[in-house]
Amino acid sequence: MKAPKYQRAEVLHAALREAVQTLNDPVEGLVVTGDGVVAWADGRHILMSYRWDNGHDDAGRPLLGSGAWTAQYVTDCNADFSEAAGGTTSTRHWWSRLWRVWR
Image 1: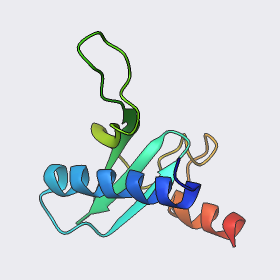
Image 2: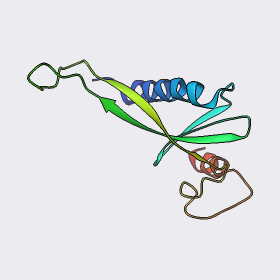
Image 3: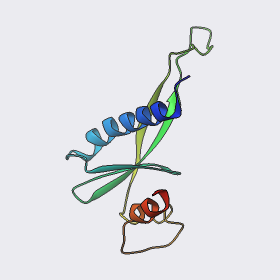
Image 4: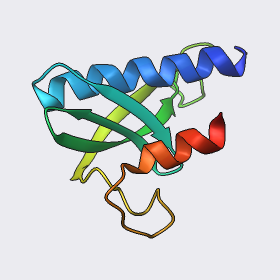
């Protein structure tokens, strides 16, 4: 089992790969939220889900050490992303409010 910081790095790596393919512009940022990962580029924001995909043998049993994190595009969203901001709307980006909590 990997340390959580390495797990988070692998989630972000999978999300970045998906964001690059979906946004078709240089990715300007990624934020992990309780709802998924939000990425943005050139004014467009997208929400992606992420999950652990484990490999299985022919009998359907999980293969230890065979899995990987994957991310998948869910929908476009706006910069406020009101669900992540606690259901409120604001002219400030929702992640700037979260940043104050984390610091």
